[in-house]
Image (tube, rainbow, N blue to C red; front, side):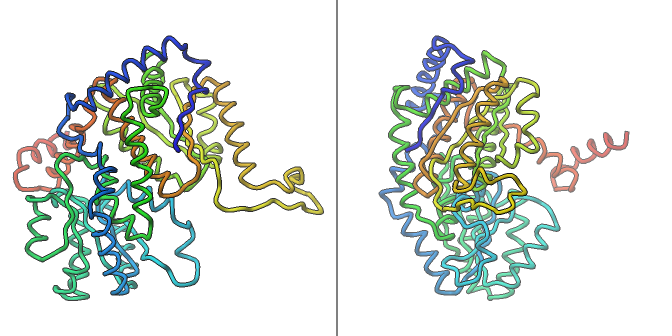
Length: 450
């Protein structure tokens, strides 16, 4: 079970201050549960674990997996951006063997790669180098079908699949996750006969990992979605309790807002000592950055993987400006074993480690780092899980989503909108001479010519 430990904050805050913010978090939880707050038409994610544990959605995703396996598909290109890819990318990177593509032997599941999350010509060309060598299918994820980055990638991948396999077969190798009734991608799917899954109107992209947006790619990659939903279901129950002693989301939301509002801790660093969690940091940064960073407010989310980043970011964290807090995600049990052996010459001076597991060294590095950072003025919140598997990932996903909704309401912002992301798009469309942007284009070009 996921647990929250706030001991690393006790030397910075008083019990009275914490209890005050627990009260604020409880009030925010009530707003979220009663659906009376800003953005309350986007809270459909709250009960996804219980809903999707009972319906046929997992079965439908597994049917796609089995159909493509029968066709010999060994590469699936998942097209999406932001919340339409980060949850799946996080889960797959956490669960897979990091060197699986280099190991010999027959693979049990296709390799899942991602496109549409950037506009790099080199990236798409190099992706197509791989696509041309493999038996390929694609999942395109977009509510509208017109978001520039995924739309460009889908146009290229779709044309390749149609040219390679023919239109009829292409329709069986393309699955769309999109709006139930409207939008360019829905219209195309109906026209071409693609299998579709629905992104419900009441679930925003960054809260969508437990919808087909995340479920289908994770299942296609060969992982157990029923176990992931079971972990999320446990958190759904725990994180709805109006009790700070048993609700980990309340504890986390209360403490991080206290540190931000009363102690000027404006940057939160998500820390893990396991490289499998690199994309947990990327998913978490979007969830919290897009949910809280508005109206001139918000904790800036950053992430590091240690011990790697202790040799780059460690100096600033230890001795830089004291505007940081850390949330450390601890994995209590490794699932592989490696013992360090003695060396006759001991030229590296490491024989004192002989007989120890590598993970024991990692755990002591984590503990030593936490103590050093606390002594250096960095308060720490700790989350711990038993191991990295589907069950625990489901728990992490739901915990962070629920805590984010609570935390944003404590902060006084709408957790579910993102008005700031449109500014770059308007400029980009104007610079690319998109029809309807002529006035903005002329204004920008005049500005650049000054």
